[in-house]
Amino acid sequence: MAETEIRELSNLRAELSTLKKQMTAVQQRIKQMEQEVYNKCNHDWTIDRTNVGEHTEHVCVHCNMSKAL
Image 1: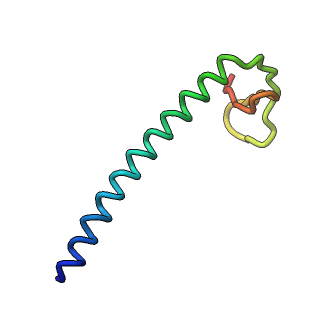
Image 2: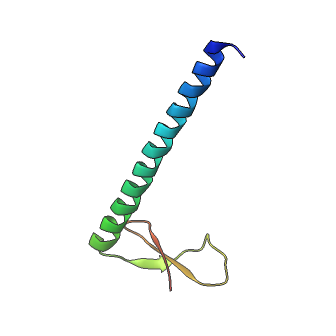
């Protein structure tokens, strides 16, 4: 294998590792923000007609988050 290919492979692995860390940070921030919105919202729950499952799902008309009741 050529030295440049080995170097490129190493760089790509490092880049992938960095991107995974960034993705994890973004996912954590999304989860935190969802919790903040959920706690601050003055929910108005309506039945979610798009979800046909075993349990009735409700969705808030303000924040569009769902809650299984």
